[in-house]
Image (cartoon, rainbow, N blue to C red; front, side, top):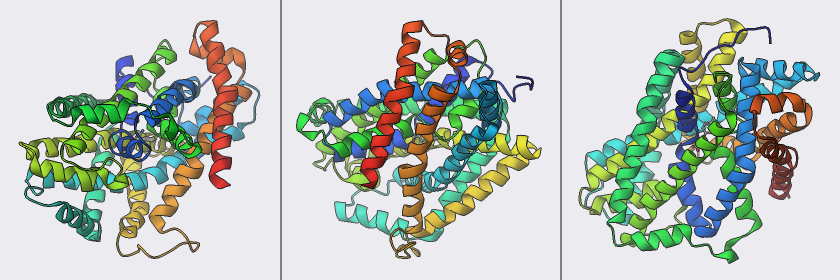
Amino acid sequence: MTQSRIGQWSSRWLFILAATGSAVGLGNIWKFPYITGENGGGMFVLMYLGLILVIGIPVLMAEIMLGRRGGQSPVKSLEVVAQESGQPKTWGWLGFAGILTAFFLLSIYSVIAGWSASYVFRAFSGAFAGLDAQQIVMMYDSFIANPKQLMLWHTVFMGVTALIVSRGLQNGVETAIQILVPGLFIILLILVGYSITTPGFKEGVVFLFKPDFSMITASSFLLALGQAFFTLSIATASMLIYGAYLAKNASIFKAGCSIAVLDTLSALLAGLAIFPIVYTYGLLPDEGVGLVFKTLPLAFGEMPYGRMFGGLFFLLLVFAALGSSISMVEPIVAWVTQRWNIVRVKASWLVAGLIWLVGVGSVLSFNVWQDYRLFGRWNYYELLDDLVFMLLLPLGGLLIAIFAGWFMKRQFSFAELEMPPALYSLWRFSIRFLAPIAVIVLVIVTFM
Ligand code: PFF
């Protein structure tokens, strides 16, 4: 490794904080509760936990490890690591694939994050008070039918992300993350504290933790696997770049476990905050995508101090989404600055601007372009969503596992991970066999 590294976190703790900020996102607060709700609760949670442990953590460690070993922007890091192990430089494409995944993912992620931002203001201003279920749904429907509104919030969200990243690793990313991540855990604890006092608490806990073995199906298993990758921010080059900034003497094993534990904790806390409220107000847990925007506001409209709790809840979503969006822009910006020698400020606004532009199509997919089908099947948003979730994320995770397990020399991964030999063997077994087999089964079953 001849070239100097491209940046370094001020401390190990900041790396864990930033990676946790990346991992905890809409996937934890918005998606995890609703897919758990749709898939029968406890059994799904159990499967998800198992998959995080057996496959998620090893692949997360692999991605951080590849980043740190390379110490460069994602494409270059993979080239460096590949060459060191006598492999062709073309592996750099895997870094590029991660960058593309982050690009497309953020273009849709930002739109939903924008909805959350808009709901912060609605909630704090008391807009849900006195509305019945139908009126809440109408509010949501008329909001997403309004392209100007969605565009405004999408723009604000991408603008804030660009502003943070443009200020640099220390001044921008580290500063923001030190507010966002503790902030989101504090809000979560306040909300769980409230939900403990509600009469539906017990029912919510039972729903979340009581496994019903009849609920194990192939499709819920695959959903849990996809969610495990997504929630740990695997395959978007985020962990490659965050790993590249990690000091050589930090333990990747400990860091990976800490990130996964904090991430899982936040998802469970989100479930604990949401389901008791759902049961207390006689709502349904399996409302799907709309759970957060169409179901919960009804409860916030009715409960005492609902303005405050509702506002805090949506603020939590925005905080979580921002930590994630920063981590999707950062690898792209690092690549652009290294590849084209552009200064960070320019690169940040350029990258965020392009993502914004691609996201405009998703904004319009909820209204004016809603029925405009591409390839006779998807609208624009659905196409990107499927491209990312069905193809790019699983394939990216698969290739990272295969590269780290089969192509990188054993001695190098062993040296980089510095784990006790028995644990290292378990890691390697998961990376070489469990993770690839699971993903291949996932892809085959999905496309059959
Ligand atoms: N882990 C994030 C979530 O659960 O919402 C999603 C995500 C963020 C994926 C950042 C990828 C990424 F680079």
